[in-house]
Image (tube, rainbow, N blue to C red; front, top):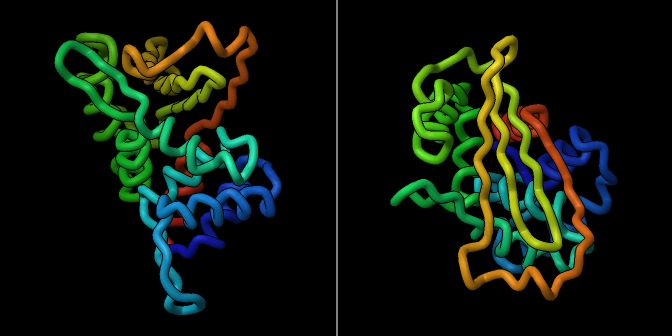
Amino acid sequence: MATLSQLVAGIAAVEGIDAERVGAIARAIREHGLIRTSGRGTSAAQMSAPDAANLLIAANMADTARTAPAAVTQYRALRAKRNKQTSEFGSELEEMISAAKQDCLADYITKMVGLLGTRGHVLGRKRFLNETYGISIEFEKPIPSVIVGISVLNFIHSDAISFGEHPGQSSAEARGDRRERTRITQRTIHAVANVLRM
């Protein structure tokens, strides 16, 4: 299992962002109980999928370390809904990271598309090889939303699952017209999973 410093270094390297910035964000969300904490050195806390998911959200959506805890809380709570099936983005991101860590990403994606994707989509009915999946996770602000795109190499079909605020939670009109998007892919998910295997 990996330490927080290893997770910070792994995310900074794969995303090409400053490790000091990711470290400051990690400390801020750890102080708010969003990353586990314990001793130092050999007794340092071992990172889990929830810790990694929270740091990924914060590193990609927080403007500063000070705003990172609120960003994690807000983006984790975004919901995807199909009929009576509702799921929060934070839980889905944790499951995706865990599945990548255990080399069973295909099983997770098939389940996710089957439950939350386009009804009857082939990606929700048929497993493909783990390494053939293309995943994009696109975060948007200031109105929080996430779109998880899933495709398969050399296969024409793809699907997308949208996570957003539930009715009554957003005040879109009050936030202005500008939108910012940040996108990560399966490279980041696999890199984080590899760090967690340490």
